[in-house]
Image 1 (cartoon, rainbow, N blue to C red):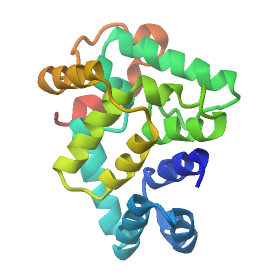
Image 2: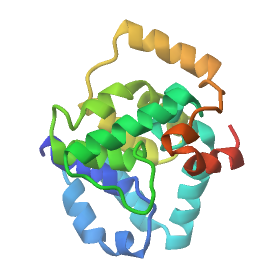
Image 3: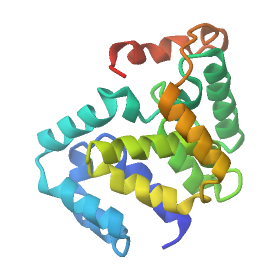
Image 4: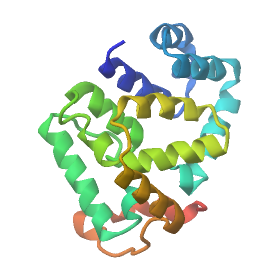
Length: 203
């Protein structure tokens, strides 16, 4: 199974589960065949009711800031640097012809994974490599809560370069100190209002 297929499937499986996703059970099983983490996740996904899996998704990603899907938050918090990182991501996508729908932020992990799948190993996977620390923190948080979604992050991380000693040191610092808390500067790049949901969730 090639890298693009794996990143694309991870993107799909990390989206909010709706009726259409669960109705595609046969296709999901076929796409996940041969990849243990994906196979186990898909079986879990398809054994629950729509209400159950939707509630689990919200509890996992929307109500816990430590396991949010917005990657730039892990490195920059709600700061000026985050606003610039989001703007640079949007420009990178635009250069490859990718347009975001519905006002979604460009650092949402399913979107970053979709970009990796469509743009290829070089420029397409660059955002994943740049935000490797955030992805590792997210994976650790998911394992801590023992959610099946951790299986998806395991597959994604296996596709990325191994962590260096410097990466591990930075991860320890981020895990201990948390992201910066400055809140100025986001409106200057036109991204401030989209960050309002962070004020409503718990760390």
